[in-house]
Length: 254
Image (tube, rainbow, N blue to C red):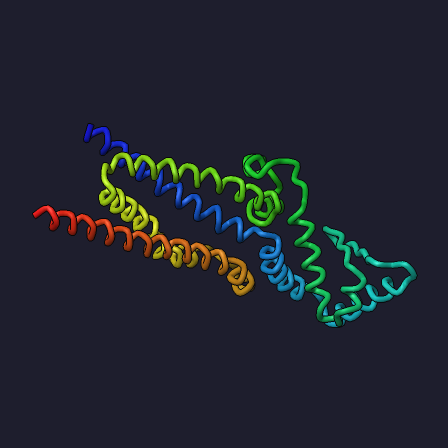
């Protein structure tokens, strides 16, 4: 029976660790792909790109054109077609900014279009399909479909973690052994805290987009770091409690 319990404890530990890591990643990516977060970070990236392409005086000309269109009776939105896309701006927003604020309005509208775009497939199907290169990164990291996917899989990782935790508890055979097993599992998960910085350095980012992309990814890294650090602290605490309780029990028997 002890062999069976040992196997159950080992299997439960693997399931528990993988499920918690999956839950951490899903929770962090759900937050990362939330519309408000994506809009703020991607707008900054697009603004950098827009400002590089806009010629001197072009912003003022564009702003004047938008205001002229908005001044027409009953006009609440103004639409402008560019080379590869069409943007629609709210006239109240146009009238509330000066020429320097136009890139931000344009970027925000483009992000909204990309975020809510109907790709005609679920998140996983979009990954599997041969999508155009310009579309695929959006389907992966910056769409409502991605946000729904990460949010939906979180519950499955939680269920798997509970199942793994139950196997650990049964296999451990005692409260102190279970606490130690949970603790070492969380410590194993928490080691990821020390590797987050390395993954950030390993991501290749073009020099001109360095600041914008870093601003976009920094919140994701911060969230992951917080979750892994909490796991590490919880693991150390559980290990200490488990061994402490075991020591006190052994001492009480003598």
